[in-house]
Length: 616
View 1 (cartoon, one colour):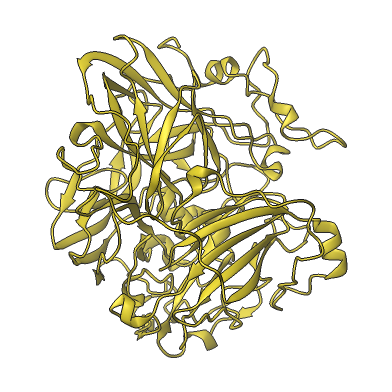
View 2 (view 1 turned 90 degrees about the vertical axis):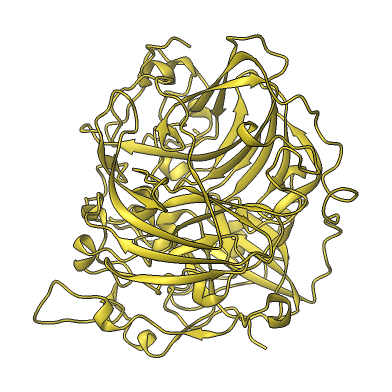
């Protein structure tokens, strides 16, 4: 593509410019299949300024390691594109050589080598303060000027007091020490903010970073036993999509329909970012590369593929390596998921370019107001140098690698959980929900340690939701279509706050589809498609296996840790009444347990997140 191509001509060239129209019989997907003369920009949506793709080099994120690290969340300035000014953002700083203006450094750790990490909140100014919704769980006006944070190691097998509980908040000027045992296999993990009801604005503004866990099989060195690309041929890709205001500042709002400062429910971005840069280009050598991909976006599922539909190989996902490389031409990646892939550029001449694209249609509720597919992430330009010449491994586990994954265990209990959006015509839109409950409701799941459970995740919404369970990994059994209308007619959904988890058996609409081969292995986040029952099998570990008590209590932040801007009524923001919910009772005593939630961050914030405990 030409270097001077703008965003509008880019969308036109890729044939994704029309908006979905909410008319009878016209599907969202059909509306995106035909090229148009000019890119459609819905008047209901905000749109980023035009910028040319491939003006910037793909940034290489710095790497830090050690047994004791200090990570600071800071206010910063960042330039997202050469033709845009520096704008306010948030970043994680770690040591003098990892001072970024956006995102955080790659933290490299080793299995069985514990890491002590001191997290400090040194934020001065939040770039998205006016987008905070003070009607959500525990959010006060004081959050705009003194924003609390909570650091979570996503995918980490971590003691509850170091897991980044959303109510374990650290205010500016405060710090907390986390202990990460790293007693797990090598994998692509990531760390990000997890503060109650403001995760979406904190992560969107930049609080995310990759955490690469190594072990004796997957060392990250050039002499690694599995023969995988390493060094300059191993490239982390933190992938996101964004909307920018006309002044180039970050915007989490997608539509004029929802007032500023109100929860929206999710926004499809119109520009793609990799490692904090809009539509960058990476010059690659003629050889094999290992790309460690994270969907660190707030909302969208992507169907990733190369413009020439070249083959690539998935070698791992959330919980580590697969048994063997899986050849693919595309993969669907939901927010929170990670995929470890090999891409071979050895067959291309110098100067050849290949773009990494997305063609996933936006969810229907976004499409009907004009959201279109965000089509592009980055471009690879093949150089003349010879790169990594090793071939694709025939196997990754067994032999020189870790033990094979093995068959899925037989569950001893089947548990039904539900994903829904209560029906309500209102602006801002109604909340999202798991089990028809709010986060503050006490009717939580309490599996027993050492037990193997099958969770049947029933999604009655039309949209996909990535469900993440803290602490554990699981296996995907499959997805079965659900006759959602029949299911709801036979089991009327009660008022929000009353647990609703009807058995889906008897309402299934067809055979179960097994997971794609590249979804095999250990996962901590699963894409739960609309109108389906997604089955996963998870074993809940014991304290002896973990080396810590998964049901240990830890102190709740005190009222003094959450100053209010209202000097006549100082209070702990968890002692609030929001949306008619009295939160005062839940603030008594210590915190305990973990959470499970949708990883669409707007949904997680309101209120698609529940606590769970592993109780003997």
